[in-house]
Image (tube, rainbow, N blue to C red; front, side):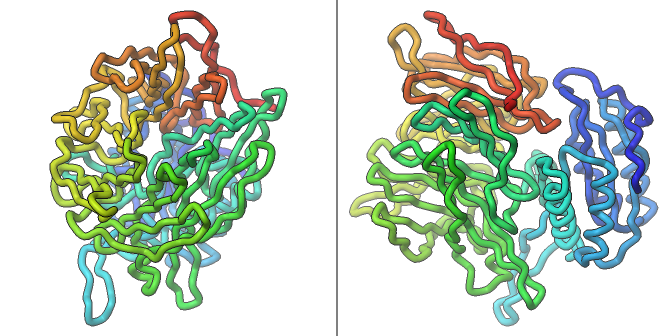
Length: 527
């Protein structure tokens, strides 16, 4: 497989609104039918190559042919028919080697695969065995794909962005709502010296890029840590230092896998973050239960205590706290409504931490906050339903940003409000990032950035603390894969960042113009 794919030979033009740079997407699945919903997610401009471990049945092959034809009609390139490896063992070394050879041939910028740790549908208390509604091969395929992707990235030094998807779509929103690991929103950070750091999840874990004293960007540097899964959460402590949270998956000698929350922090832009430290998980006693945890949410209270939350095996919320003096509590559980994977933690106006979760069984959101005596209090009266994957912290203390479940309109809600505030016509999809303290004409503004219409970066602003006055949006044109981000230095310099599908990071700085929110041209982050 030494021949490179002929990118001229596929169908589709690769042009059109929001198509951005051409980029190869490898879709790695067990059988052709498994690739159909993943192919349907790809926008114009993608060059799609499907890799199947087995040939599958006639109906599945026909469904994939139709999906690839539809992708070509909307402006994708299809790099030939599906590549069938013809292997039986899905996570053995021979399969990983075969997948690695395919990746060498394709040189993809992105990879889509299945969920390495699928959700259970029931649990047998007597045997201690969960039941799943997907074949075991789905998880094994994802594990093999991740192993091959890590090996390819280590071999080439090129970041490979990975999305893992649940096997079944949301009843109302379809397969797009089923990412196993969330899209990071606040992945850009400004240090005390004003230099920026970008943190990005990849197949081989987190990579970072940072500025030197001349403003030049480093090459991608791995934040060392074997077994990290392709997701990332970045939160800032009360001093402004960025803290990183991820999931780490470690193979066991008995054939199972342990999945745990891990944490690192960066205290100087010029130096690597601290080593990853295990936070563990609430179901660690049984690896079959422990592997099912959701992605972590975290926030600091005003005193510097760090709270970490996860969706546990039973689909409720578990939490653990690292006190400001360095001691961890045990994992504790919040009883109440069952939640889905989406959690977001925020620092409230009272200085304590609150956590929001998207309800699992019905449309809605539940909130937990510290009540009298510090005991957790459940609030089921939150007056909105959020689109999966869109809950993020708002600029206002205790408030959250989200996209409406039905309309996808960007909104903000703060406790005590009778209804959420719509944030105007940003359009687009995915989570929003936010910063505060941007000054214009002596007034402080909050700034939002979003993946807007056509897949480009959109930026909006409103007077700090007053989203009800309306948001002024503008489309800045840069193609954005995933969510764009923003950071404000201590001196008030605002920078936006977007990552393109072809591995570039683009930045634009605010121009110093009175009474206006204008930006320089987008520039690649280069050395």
